Each structure stands twice: as C-alpha cells, then as structure tokens.
Length: 420
Image 1 (spheres, rainbow, N blue to C red):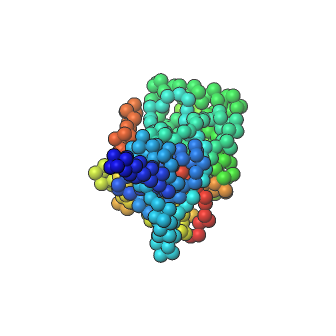
Image 2 (spheres, rainbow, N blue to C red):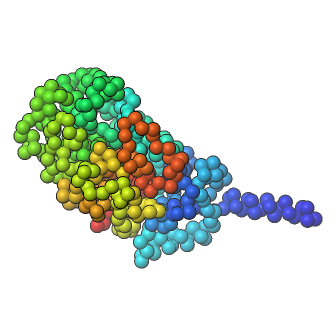
C-alpha cells in the first residue's frame, strides 16, 4: 500500500505546485535575474495575451499573473526566480498595495508594445545599451532609420528608442575621425537618403526626421532616448529652419545669430540653452554637464532615484521601479543635464546631488510620452570606440539597465491620469 500512496502524494504535490493559482515574479534583492524578468513579462503579454499586475513599490516592482506550467517552465529556462501563491495570497497582496496608507499600487499590463530602435544600417563603433537590454531580455524589436521614418512607418510602432544619434546632422562632431570607415559609410548613407527625399544637406534631412518623430509623440507615441540623442533632438526642434552647422559638415557657415532665434517652446525638455558651434568640439550646447565640470570621478559617481506616489504619480513610479535607489553613474557623449536648463514642467526622476544635475527625466507632449536618460551604458563607465559590447550575462541584476526596461513595459500599462 505504501508503494501506491507515496507516488500519489508526490503527484498531488507536484500538481499543486505546478498549477498554483498565481505566479509572483519578485523584483527585490532576491531575484536571480531582474533583466530577463522583464522579457518574461513581455512574452506573457505578447504570446498569451494574459494581463499582468505590475505591483508598484511592492518588493522592487514585482509582477503577478495567473500561473501555468508553460510560465513556470519559462522561468526555469530563463533563470528567473518565481513564487507560487494561491488566489487568497494574491488577494492579500493586492489588498496590501491598494491600502490608502501604503505607497504602493497595482497597474495592469495589458498588451505588449511594438518596438522600434532607430539605428543606422551601417555598423557603428558604439554599442546601444537599449539594443543590448532588449536582446538579453529576449524582447523583439525592429530596426528603423531615416528612410523608414520619411516613408511614414513610425505609426506602426508604439515605442521608439533613440540612442547615439546626432540630430543636428554633424555626425556626433567626430570630424577628426572622418577618415574612418564607419564615418565614411554613415556619411555616404546619409547623403544618399537626403538626396532621395529632396534635401541638399544632411542637417535638413535630420531636421525633417525630427519633425516626423515629434508628430509620432504628439499623436500618442512613446519615445525613449539616451546619450546624445537626448539633447540633439531638442536642439533640432528649437533650431527648425535655422542653419546651426559649420562648414566642415554642410559646406557653409552657421547663422551667426542662430542662438537668438532658437524657439524653446518647441522643445520637449530643455530651455534657455546656447549652442556650441566649434565643429571640432564634441559638444552641441551647454545642456550637457560634461565630465570636466561635474566634480566627480568613477569612484563617487552615483545618482539617486526619487520616490513617487504610486497611487497619485503612477507613471514616474513605473519608470523608477528598482531594487536599488542609488545607481552608479556612467558617462556618455551626453552624460547629464544641467538642471537650470530643464523646463519646470519636466519630471526629474533621478539626480546627482554632488554635481547638481538631472540624470533621468520624463514628460508628456501632446498625447504622447518621452523619457531622456543621460549616459551611454549603465554597466560601462566610459565606453570607448570599438570596445567590446557589455556582456549582460555578467550583470543580470543591473539597476541601471532596469530603468531602460521599465520604459519598455511602460506602454503596456493601463494609464491613470497624473494627479500631481
């Protein structure tokens, strides 16, 4: 009889474990792989059309959804920590986060967004942190560039990422590298695209692309930018119709009065800035808090995430979910934003108090949303040209990379109106 009962007990325990009512993906310090957990959430939304509760400020922003053997198997395959809980336990968690006195809430994730990464067809010597994060988390995306945007492809997507791109049309001001193969290839490609759409100069093409992206956001799109895609995008908006590029890049001089003609009302994030015209200085304006001005080094370069009200400020709360509030800093061609140039209606979500700078900011434009994240690669303090890309297998719990993936899931959320 014992030989019959023991297998039956094992079967029942295994069945109850495998088909428990709810699956909780903790996102606190006990999670083995934070980054792949976002990919799991995306996979559940996309493949199974299953709603997910994103538990804001509960155990680092955990995910909870109905359990199935397929979901458990995927957790095991991806190396993700999970907990089987009953419906009663899930109800208790929801009651806890909904408590009016608790700075927590549950946001429904409903549909996986369609993602586009703006990147040139030619090889680049810089690795895009967002592309690395998406690939590691196994989140699908399409690559698009100027041609696709000029052809009106952007409305096919929900979320657009911009990274190491110079929207002023000066190729990052890397004129000293003009003999390199990547510089020549990108210049050739840009000239060909500009000519195809009737532009005589690359800055004119980039200006038109920026306006298409602007329309995408105004119409309800989500835009996330890092590195020098942040400030050059706003510069290009403010400088619509102006020549701000010196002769090494477009064959003629810049308008000497361009600064006085900048229209800051068109920008997403920044105001009152001045341009840097020197074609050999690898800066575009005084927005960026450059390394020599910051007064920090790699050993003490950290920034603090702000804590927002999950119930009243759900959007910045979603974008700042993390298991750490103190994030190690990292450089980029645009590293950080001087706070005096940040518009008053912009939400600063992280700042470095030592150097009085904003590192991570967010806002709305029309019906859409945008986020700017300063720096190039959260796990490579100063990524140099042609260095090997970051291996995220070595950083599965990166707090800096988590901020990127918060933005990826953000469009999937059922939004609540921002109240403060």
